[in-house]
Each structure stands twice: as structure tokens, then as C-alpha cells.
Image (cartoon, rainbow, N blue to C red):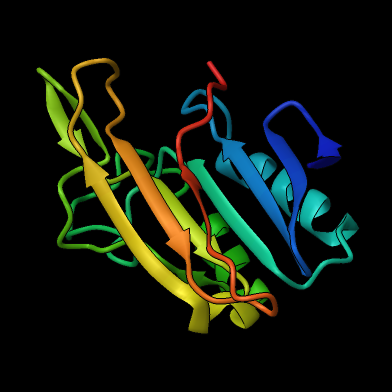
Length: 164
């Protein structure tokens, strides 16, 4: 593992296994900050990376039917726009299953605010993506995997990184 970038809300590491090199970008968008600023931070990190095999996973604190069921976004000033614009501009593939259990649950409600995405070269390698309920956190565990590679190895890992 090689650390490629660390900012206040984004971490990028390159993982290598056999002949495979994938850059994993983890991010956290605090609900107290403007999404447009956080997306610019994420975009800056992604622009600095040379690897075209990108896997992005994070707590976006934003709802969208692109990665969850139809639920009004609580961040009316953002409406998911800056993040969706970024996803479209980067031509990212969303790996979430909108029929999954919520990624975030408390006694006050539930939502689908965590997102996993990849660059187009990783689309054919989509493996499992699933949410498992837990009592250990208000975020449920998300696990995902990639299938195949140039050396026929599998890469998998837990989604949730400890940013808080």
C-alpha cells in the first residue's frame, strides 16, 4: 500500500496485488460544510492521481436516487448537485444497490448517504456490494469486492474507514 494523498477530508492510497494497481479514494463530507467545497477537494485529489483504476468510497452525507431510494435531500442548499456533477464529469460508475438496506440508521431515521464508485475500467470487475446492519455504529457496514485482474486475483475490502 502506498499513500498517494491525504487532505482534511480525502485519503487516496494505491493498492497493489500481483500485477494489479488500484487507487482507493476514501472521503468524508461533514454535513456542516458546503458540499461544493468538499467536492472540489475530492476533485483535486482525483486530478492529482495518474492511475485510471479508481475506486472511491465515502460518507457523502447526501441523498440521491443514483445510489439510494427516492428520499428528499436534507441539504437543500446543495441538493446533491456538486457531487452528481463530479460523478458525471469523471464518468464514474456507482456500485451501490438502491434496493439495499440503508447505509445510515439511528433511532431518528435512516438514509442512504454512503456511496461507492469506480472508474469505467473497473466496471467489468464488479463483484459483490452489500450492506450489513450493525449495532456498533450509526453507519452500517458496506463490503464490496472486485473480481478478476491481470493476475486473476480478487481484491476486496471493508468500506467504512474511521474518519471521525
